[in-house]
Amino acid sequence: MDFTRAKWRKSSRSQSNGQCVEVADNLPGVICLRDSKDPAGPILALNPDQWRTFIDGVKAGEFDVG
Image (cartoon, one colour):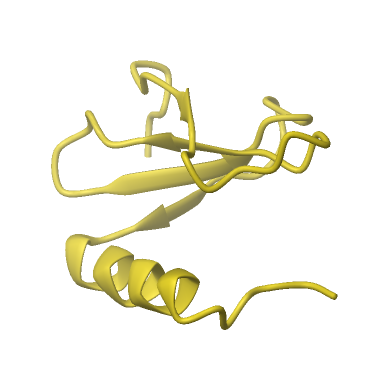
């Protein structure tokens, strides 16, 4: 998949200590995530159903560290 036209923004759930996730939701049929500290690194691409499941997990605290 070509991500060159992805428009990245920092997630509203990112931490101010540098633990940031960037999201691109402008590509058809896919929502992309990446680590803001490594913009050339791997990209996680989710379909809309997977995105909803992921967001539900974030809201439920499933991914909280510490």
